[in-house]
Amino acid sequence: MDATIKEIPKRILKLALGALSQANMHAVFSDPGSDHWDFISVINAAHAGELLLKAVIANDHPLLIFKDIFSLDDSRADSLELVNLIQRGKTHDFEKLPQVFWVTTGQRIPNPDCFERLRRARNSIQHFCAPEGEDFRALSLEFIYTIIDPLIFEHFGLFAIEYHEDHSAGYDYVVGALLHRELKFSVPDDFDLSEIRLTAELKNASQDYRDWVAKELDRIGRSDLLNP
Image (cartoon, rainbow, N blue to C red):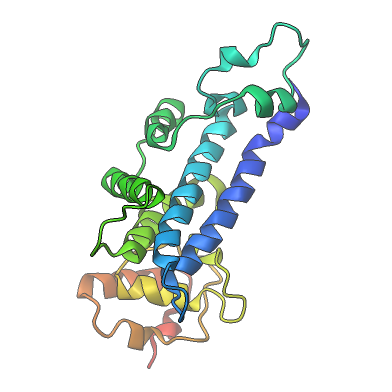
């Protein structure tokens, strides 16, 4: 097997993190003229999820992401090379990835209901008939932080809040959006905030969610962030 084929998981993960950065940005921020970002957040979240699942699957073996590995053999080449995969290979469709993920890893994806809701929303948007009255930003954030975030933390030691396109304030406003929606997220050991105050952001949060935040901050030794 071509040595470059072994690089497939890393290549896929790099693309997945790029899509995740855009999904976080489009799901959290809104400015005049960016009304379309809520739709785009769904597209990018789905793209990030698809690539991430493929990256995890490819970690077991790069060829497992392809629908029919037998079609990759053209009966002429002595060995399988990356160029053959690009020219002949067809990867699994997004909707089939939870099953492929389970067969490969023995794990079920977290929150399969959200996966299905986002998949349907993505398909509707792509076919120009997105349902009205749907909070696409909320759906995108739920998908990112109940599916993508726990998976990239478990399999790659990464934190979804760190992938965004706000180069001035860092992940502060991403975290703020999650706190408002009471979405749990993987908290890095060097977690810090400078643009928002946790006490203000958690003002209307449920006690259960406040307790979760306090426990996570205590775990990393940053309970001081809850000081007024």
